[in-house]
Amino acid sequence: MSSSIVADLHSHTTASDGALTIEEIPTAATEAGVSWVATTDHDCIHSGVDSPITTIEGVTIIRGIELRVQTDTQQIDLLGYRVESTEELTNEIARLQENRVNRARKIITRVEAEIELSLDIDPSSGIGRPHIATAIAESDAPYDYTTAFEELIGDDCDCYFARDVTAVDQGIRLLKDACPVVGLAHPLRYDDPESALAVTDKLDAVERYYPYGTEVNTSIVDRAIERNNLLVTGGSDAHNKRLGQAGLSESQFEEFKTELYS
Image (tube, rainbow, N blue to C red; front, side, top):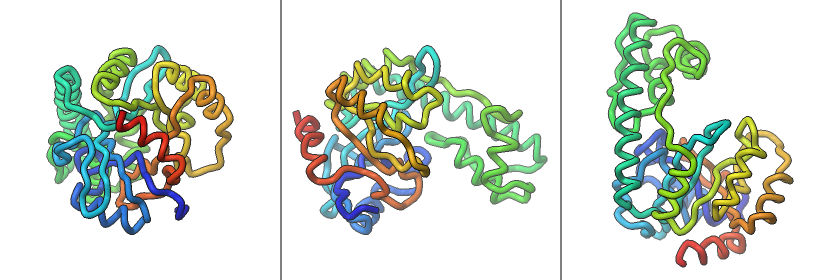
């Protein structure tokens, strides 16, 4: 972790598929040297963060959301910051969460039939495939976390069920109505980064700093930033309890913070 990072603007909690609770964020942030953290859970607004920006034990938490949307060619993820619970967004989140639970129930039922074992997992709100893979790995079935995905619940596997995804134009509109800053997450993770970055002409920001796990060429991201006058964001996309793997330095964060409070 770079000691210059002060803001980690992409993290997940137990409200979706992360490991951190809200109460654990201040300790994790302090250990990472981070003073600002955005909670960006999948398709939900964390109910434990009662205002768009709050401070807990000296760490400022920005309430956010990561919303998956469907373009003409692929699914991409949008990050909304300082999110308000507007009626339309709340209704869409409720629809997505109901679908998520039903989908998880179908996957679990199919997996249990395949491995002929019962899994110790409840298909409740926020559950995702990582939780199911963990339950499979902890069962007596001959799979670990990785092979559970590769052989049972991955996108092309027999136990996979697709989930509903919001249309891109609807998703942008919902987040624009609810957040002062809306950006594109991890642009170089998609099958077609150029197509994903084309959407940024309707957005405020793009995630420039991200732990891809390998060396990447960010030139197309930089061109999109210049072309569309985008704010720069960055974050760990932490699903574990380790923050600060990517983010913004103090000087980089100032421009983002100005827009955040606009």
